Amino acid sequence: MLSSAIYRPPEFFAPEEALLPRSGEIRPFRTQLLKWVGNKQQQADSIIRFFPKSFGTYFEPFLGSGGVLGVLAPKHAVASDTFAPLVQIWQTLHEDREALKRQYAERHALIAQTGKKAAYGQVLASYNKKPNGADLLFLCRACYGGVVRFRKNDGYMSTPVGAHDPVSPESFGKRADIWHARTQGARFLHLDFAESMDSAKPGDLIYCDPPYTDSQAILYGAQAFSLERLFDSIAACKARGVYVALSIDGTKYSGRKLCDIPIPDGLFEREEFVDVGRSMLKRFQMDGRSLEDHEVRDRLLLTFRHPP
Image (cartoon, rainbow, N blue to C red; front, top):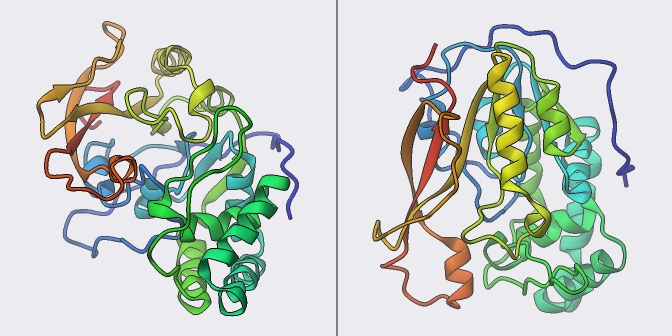
């Protein structure tokens, strides 16, 4: 297992132009490495089309499952998260993807030995005893809907096993190869979002996908997350010429509820809405009952008015 200590390079990448793929030139990239609630991979094309046409280094300081990073596949990126076990997965993918494949295969093999529920329980107990990326990798692929949630009183992961069968080691190995290639330009770091964003230079682009204040209090890191602190970091980035795009709560209940977010006046120049379909977290909370009334649209807030 890789160390979870914060790694600070002497400096991040020098600004270079990173051109986006034009619509229609490539098929949408939908192969997921991790199952993760709030994953933006299905919506990444809709989000990316609002990005600047060119920018320097791409920053994603709330990495999660890296849905936008994987679709964008930037030449240079700083991909970070405050959740150490999650960062360990990405660092292993980057530095030794064969080791990542072995970690998944070893835990998947327990299913044939003990059954899926018992295998999941064994890995979950191992993770809760000592949180680590190798166990988390299997758990997020095998848990219900990728809802990696934690009990408030002790921090234990408490998501039950999913009804689906987790992907085979062979399928996961192919996914690891694809994601390794698509993220070669990224540096994966265990950082607080503000520390990562402070390193962005004029002309760089930051995409923020933080825990949502209206719906994600049970998810990792959400209880300690401060939206006000994020707005302060965004304001500092905007002041020095860094482009920032923020996904945040939008509308719920098929548009009947507009989430009330205390957005500072003048911080953002443009607001768009992106359809994200039906909430997997709400499906989890409703135990699989009908979600016809739970169509969700996210806000996409931009510190620039038109793609430069």
